Length: 87
Image (cartoon, rainbow, N blue to C red; front, top):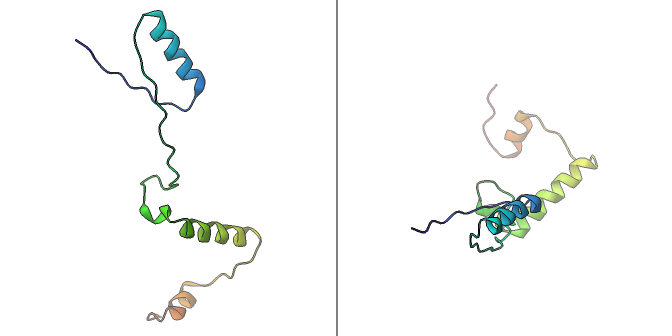
C-alpha cells in the first residue's frame, strides 16, 4: 500500500535532512516549489491583493514614521465624518 507524505518548509536545512532520510531508506520522493503568496494578510483578505491599497498603507506608514500625521480625538473624527457626537 502506497502512502503520501508531504513536507512544507522554507528552511533548506530541514529539506536536506528529509532528502537524506528518503535516500537512505530508498524512498522515492518528488519536490515542487509552492507559489509565494504576495498577500500580506494572514487570512488572505482580497483587499490586500490590490497593489494600490497596499501602496496607500505603506505610504501612510512612511508618513507616520516621518511625523507627517495629525492626531485627532474620537470627537474630532466623528465630527469630520458627519457622525453624531454624543456628549
